[in-house]
Length: 464
Image 1 (cartoon, helix red, strand yellow):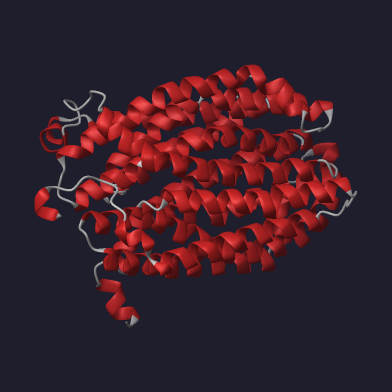
Image 2 (tube, rainbow, N blue to C red; image 1 turned 135 degrees about the horizontal axis):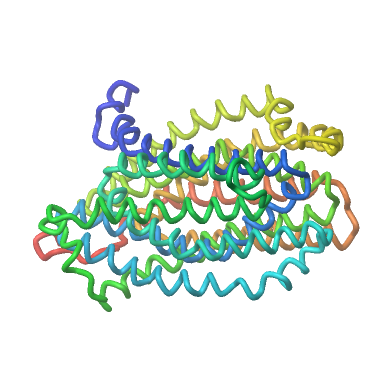
């Protein structure tokens, strides 16, 4: 089908962009927030920059399982919307809330394992101390973060994504100046360094919860979606939610675990290798997080099509989003190749330690070439896994993610460490192999089509 026809067709480019662009903007705002946070920390000192990525990835590692489960609520909302069962939307949202509250409390308790956890990383003592305090603050913010995800699914699952964009932008506009002031001690704020960055992030997790609650629990939404009256725990719906959501959570956890393990192993190579990898990963978020917005858009469109018993429409929508994602990632890959030095120098530390960043830039330019190729392959993996999740094929994605993490990342990286390979290119080649296996596997599975027969929600007799 021509580009013109695909633009206006159901599940075409226009619909994908209508749903996806606000999510992309939302993710971009989160990217800007994370990116500026790293720049502020890099300008503050190389130690805070070196500590920020391992600590934030470790916190996200533990959060990722619960996040992967909570965000699967969006598929239930999408499928109930496609099946014309709006009264089930509010009930689904509340099951996500009941899942998120105890999950957040558990994650906050990780405060007590921070010291032994980062001792395993083997990083210098000064960096370990910064990693511990940053990790502890981030884990406290897990509960509001998970609640924000659940509440946002009320909008995203129905394909109404502009409120999510507005809330994300508002949170970012508050976070960035607060982040800068708390790190550097501007005005009435004390100079807190990496502690200030953590506190600003904690505040940015809380703002969306308040905004979403104000937008959702209205009389109009209660009348159509039962957002107030359906607050009770529903064992049958929770069981179905966990049946599909838990594998999705495990899959997401395994992916983050593989990246976390990669970062910690690179950290053992030396401070230059760690700082250059941290900087390149931070730059890569400019490509990665907006594509996650398209990933969510894929799950929404596939979920609504499957709720309408239209698997062909789900496949068509997935292909439309893939075209958009590859176009975006191609642009980002070119930027990584053409302007690597400019992007890396954004992280240059101020003052006397600034000259130490020269070696980081030299190594980072090489790694940016890897990142450019990585972005294109990752786009395929991200979009196809979104399609599979939207259709409920979460067990397959979990198994593939676990196998790839073990055989492409963990075992090869351990072997490189045991035999004493010191170069940074070895670990990065393992990372490239990992994402390539994911891309090929998910694309093959989606095109093969067993997901077409999966039923995530219960259908009314008239739709059987």
